[in-house]
Figure 1 (cartoon, rainbow, N blue to C red):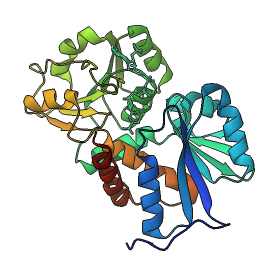
Figure 2 (figure 1 turned 30 degrees about the vertical axis):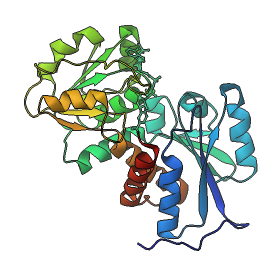
Figure 3 (figure 1 turned 180 degrees about the vertical axis):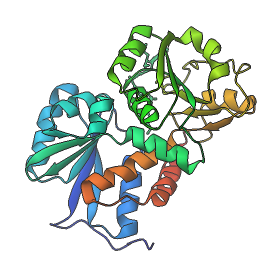
Length: 291
Ligand code: NDP
């Protein structure tokens, strides 16, 4: 795949972008623009910092000027879903949209976070089918991942969260597809750890310097358990370092981010994005940023 060094935006260039608050940390512009140049697509991707009260105006305005599609990130994913004319089943299950496409005058909402998570696991050789999953966190990302794991054949879905009521709410909203769901407080992670084959860290802890880790005692984990932190930082997160010290396999959230982006292309362009190009661009972006 060659890189188009001569590209510059013109009157027919397609515009895509990210809406969120904040967006300054996002690797999405780096990934998508590198991918556009690699496949010779005349398109450009920008990040837009949008306040909660302006989300509807921003989406309607961008639709009016002919933007091809958008990603949506924290904290606007639920609002984006509510503004859509058509919602895919996986966005419905996740209760949130991370991708919008403007097609024939209507807004289509999708959610590629859960499918992106599963693709990243597959790429790393990790199975979900038949596995007991322990999910730490019950926010938007956790809900998308929970729905995807249940649909992919997880036998058990334990959701441990600071507020157990939110874990219970998640389990009542997600189609469990045969998985046994259990809601519990964070303090119960040690009880469920020996039974888990896949552990997913889906809290927002670790975003800010000095954040504590949501769980640090891995002595009870069974050998062969895979642990995934949805966060990512160059050099790994503090959570990941603790897990690695116990000799467990640990993945970070880069794979999920790359694959949710590659899958978003399917909705926008009817073709999967070049994941390898996106992954390399994300690594370069994180190295430049230094975290
Ligand atoms: P939400 O704000 O929806 O949820 C936050 C979660 O973190 C809740 O479970 C919350 O618990 C928990 N939490 C927050 N503060 C604390 C604390 N002090 N102690 C214990 N638990 C806490 O966030 P998202 O679900 O959207 O995102 C979660 C993480 O996933 C973020 O780090 C985000 O960057 C990452 N992510 C990664 C993606 C990727 O592609 N790799 C995609 C999407 C998200 P409570 O309910 O009790 O408040």
